[in-house]
Image 1 (tube, rainbow, N blue to C red):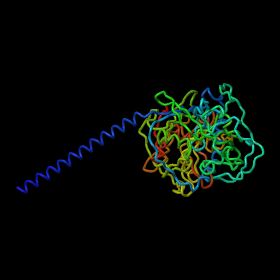
Image 2 (cartoon, helix red, strand yellow):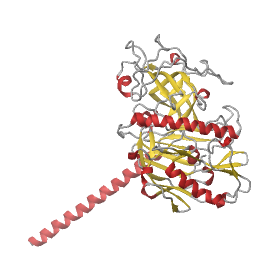
Image 3 (cartoon, rainbow, N blue to C red):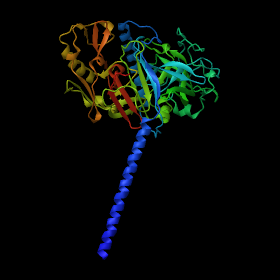
Image 4 (tube, rainbow, N blue to C red):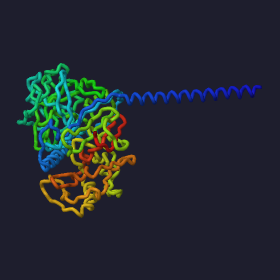
Length: 509
């Protein structure tokens, strides 16, 4: 009897345990379904990516001039990127606890027509709102707008450069070129500039504040009074192109997917009062920069906290016709059509840039002989994904193997040696060129992930009836760059919290 009683007790305990496991399993499944439904029902905040062919921008330029402009800009940008990397060396990768809430999107268009390769977004800032076209740039961490020269201090023309935090000392400048060009169809009462004094949500950041003294980049040491603004100067290549202004916070308004207006409040922005220009520096033609690089107080940092930890974009073809656009999305559920599932690989946050773990490059499934150190960030090299760089730049140890392997398939075309190609070394007559016989280029990323761009992303149109290999050589020990032409017609997703980069082919509409 005692044995039977024990068996009954054991049986009851087993049944209760199994029942409890089943309840936990069902509860977990229900929670997962609820989480999935909540995830699918998140709102999106969006901006349209705008092509420079769009009628809202300047007219077309000659294709040769456009390519030359691309390359000039890339060379300047290369110098700027070196400065950013040097400034941020030793800065540890940062990952924040980010609360997932909503999504948002920006519409983006490309910038082929005025000698630049950037993509642009329309952004509304301030209360009441003032709208501007900004360059969407994954290589910048400071979002700034061109501003009216009306600030509440009396020394806006006195910039001391003897203490440029986070970077090298700056030489004093005695002359600067202030942008005054006005667009033909301006509806901005401040002459296409942001008027902070017209926005009742704008707050100036003091030069004596903790943000200015320790947290914000590019700050100048000019602080004659605690009430004076926090000044900055950010350089864009060799110190010959720069933007000078003061920091503040304001509200940025965006369209949500439910047709409502979303607000990013207390967004740190730069109010640029003067731009020192150099050839190829495009910022006189736009309202500023929407910085997509990651740093504390950056746009990505603030948007991530409110709308989700990830952002994505899909770049339209740089030769697209007018009014062709796609979207820059903050949050989940990209709006564009995907031609295959998103592949994901580890992201290496190389502030403010987004690096990817490259394991090699192959041509027609033959892995090229490229030293592993070329892809090693710890060795000062590695690969960066950059929407602001037009072409794809490779250090010489990777450039020559790639170019030589691709040249082998071009034996039936007439090569062209034309200095007007702006530094592209391998160009040929497009007549008789058969894209279908070109070998397949593959970038191999960590985890066995393969990025296989279409031929038109690396055999580019440089001039009428002229095609070129779309690669630039880089001298020395530096980062290689996957530029925006190589990225086009793909969705790219950057997940700051999970430290992943995802991509998938897409028509970007």
